[in-house]
Amino acid sequence: MAKKNIDWANLSFGYIKTDKRFVSNYSDGKWDEGAIIEDDMITMSECACVLQYAQTIFEGLKAYTTEDGRIVIFRPDLNAERLANSARRMEMPVFPEDKFVDAVVQTVKANADYVPPYGTGATLYVRPYMFGINPVIGVKPADDFQFRVFTTPVGPYFKGGAKPIVIKISDFDRAAPHGTGNIKAGLNYAMSLHAIVTAHEEGFAENMYLDARSRTKVEETGGANFLFVTKDNKIVTPKSDSILPSITRRSLMYVAKEYLGLEVEEREVYKDELKDFAECGLCGTAAVISPVGKINDHGEEICFPSGMEEMGPTTKKLYDTLTGIQMGRLEAPEGWIKVIE
Image (cartoon, rainbow, N blue to C red):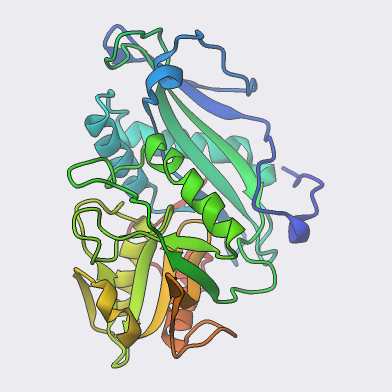
């Protein structure tokens, strides 16, 4: 299949409609078989549960063209598992994990000519999501649900390289103790919109959210986990019941230990410790790692020794190793890469 006539090198990180998407419906207590369709429009009642009470969850992953020309997706089984956990917490029916992976494979395969060529820096972003679709006016879960997967080609998150960013410590809370911070629910992201718009207006790239109970411990940003490097080259990531279990972060911690021989630690990280770290990064699907050069704590700047010019050396090794695995330049651990046949 010939690739679409797209200026791959100049793609932004935005939405472009592709030809096909996967849809499956849940009704009368069971999922149907689902199908690849062409229609990108969704028709629902004005009283649909998703519109009234935000009963929706989602995932995000990418398809790549590897160095040897194969189309692959990265660890979709973990996305399937996380969506299932999100569904349970949101009183939604679990979409079977094996069918989730198959739906992602079908959708990527159906849009193979939108997967950017190797070396362009672009990828095919894959968005599986589920929502309550029947009318609900009393506060309760929906009875009928729809699961969908669409794709869109996206450019690199950073044009011209990953320059360190400046973030601020937010006065807003991202997630409450015993809340929904550890699942990928749309409502978590809705509540972060005002905070991120405010941060951007103030000249910052992102927010650092602290724990809502004590406001002394680092949690995450609106859409990424934190990763720190100590001055003796240990990799540290915050531990909390209200942090989303990032697949990228888990993969980076494995890479740090097994590929680079570094010591890794997942533990509570206190705001007072920030000044003692050598490097800081935000990790997630979109950018893999976004280096942080400074954190602004209500006017007081915490500056990392790695500086504002480029990624710190250890962060760069982590980034190069994980992207090397994703792009087929390095051998992947068993089960990490799903090839689209």
